[in-house]
Image (cartoon, rainbow, N blue to C red; front, top):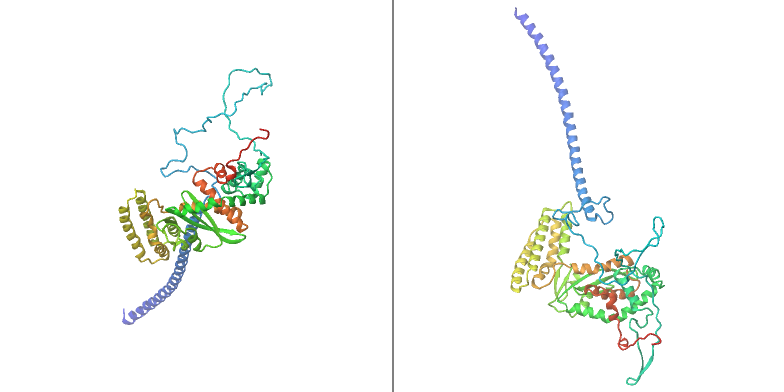
Length: 484
């Protein structure tokens, strides 16, 4: 084959190669463009996926918040349609266990009335029946149908030759200036201040149970008379609280004639004193607790109005732990806050253990030093998140007031006693909305103080109130039936 032929053959092959190269280049360009479109689509999908993940995270946090709120208020408004067995910490269901012997009301020791019962005819076919000697016993306890007893007293007007004055007797069970007896008056007090019954309902109960009509104004007049006669007892309660080595204090809102006021509580395990004021200022506890021993201890919450009082103070651990717990259950709680909450719970448990042991001055002072250092470490620690800083600031404000219980016997770590004593006033406030006048607020404070104190002491209002309202004129009074 000649050179010319070889060159022609090579030219033909080169042309074919150029064509294949062009086709391959065009295919590569198309594939490149396709890859670029796919890459762009992938970036868009990645961005959408990131946004969806962020949205899912937000929804999860919102769900946690809603779940926490649901758990907090569960059962306050609605109750579960299906009642499932509730188990205790030991895993056992509540109520009597298998083999548990039940209890029933014991038969009364004293029987007032005995009656015989028999049938004259059969209840099924009305055939006449003959009496038998076979019987069985059934004991029924009932109450008498309420009724009123109206008494007219003929009170002698007598002359005292020694004093040169006219004197008159006052029958037992009556109160000067009140046309109702002490039993009815005591019933009014129980309904108003123990049962927390509104005046309108008391009026209805009086008419329904006793067929005794009375108006809301008449009831308020009676309560006003009682307030004047129980003023000395009200003062005595305050003196006893001032003398007490340990006392509690708390306050809550109270409306007076449509204006915002405050109901203050001061209490001991045996006495409760209420005063309703127009202000929440620090002057109220200063006035009420004036004369208290500087070595006595006031258990209180974190309200600043108590801070400058000239007596030792124990801050309530329940309030501190409640604030700490409320922060921990939040969706965005910091790790610092979780650790701080666990540390505070452990510290509270350790202090409570020390308080449960017999009081030893030297040992308690040593323990006080140890726990003061533990509090100092919490106060001096550097926190980077607002939730833990908030609790740290609260601890700094209270400082060693959280540990006063270690230096004194019988000082509780919480102010729960005050919370329980002020709760009845809070319930009455929700029912009545407060007091319509300053005089009504004073009546509320005085009578509620006396009633709650009697309750703390385990005394019966029906039995004790007549003794508190007794007057000297009843001491020598002789009451006879007319004609005796």
